Length: 260
Image (tube, rainbow, N blue to C red; front, side, top):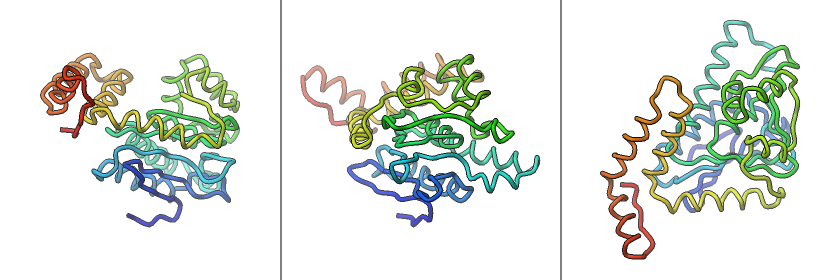
C-alpha cells in the first residue's frame, strides 16, 4: 500500500478507511493532501479487494476544517482557476466512483471539508459536528463544487442563505436539511458507517455501481437520466448477479453475488 504524508489508510474486510491526518491543522486540505486523496480514491477504483471506502479525519475536533488558507492567500486569478479545477476533479472522482464512499464527519466540516463530505455518496456525522461554507468571509466562494452540490442537497433557497451568510450549522440541522444522512454520538460514528457499508456490500456490486451512475445522471442536465436508468437496468439483466439474485429469491436463500 502506498505511503502517504497526510493520510492514513487501512483496509479491513473490504472497507478502505481513508483518514486525513493533519490534526495540528484541523485536517485542512493542502494541495499535497488533495493530491494524496486523489491517489487514495484511485485505489478504491482499481483494487478489487476494496469494496467501499470511508473518509474521515484524525482527532475529535475536525473532519476537515477547510482548505489551507496560507495557500489560498497566494492565489492569483490565473492560479486560482487551476486550484479550483484540481479540487473539482478529485471530488468528482469520489462522486462518480462505482463503489460506495461514506463520509464519517467527526467534527468541523467547513469550506473544502464540507465540499469533500458532499462529494461522498452518504454522510454520517457525530453529534458535535458543524458544517458550513464560510468562504465569503475570505472574499471568495466555494471552489471545489460546493455551490453546485449544496444546491442539489438542500435546495436553491437554503443554499443561497448558507453560502452567502457563511453560517455554520450543527449536525442535527444539517440532517433536517438533507445534508447529512445520520447523526450519532462521536464514539458510535465509525461503527455506524461500517454498519451502512456492510449492508451495501452484501448487495450486487454491479447494481450498486449503476445506482450511483443513475442518481448522478438525475442531476446532470446534459444527460437523460431515464435513458441512463433503462440502460443500467438492461445491463443488470445481462449479469450473472441478476441470475443469482433472482434464483436466490425464488429458492429462499441468501444470494452469493460476485460482481459479474
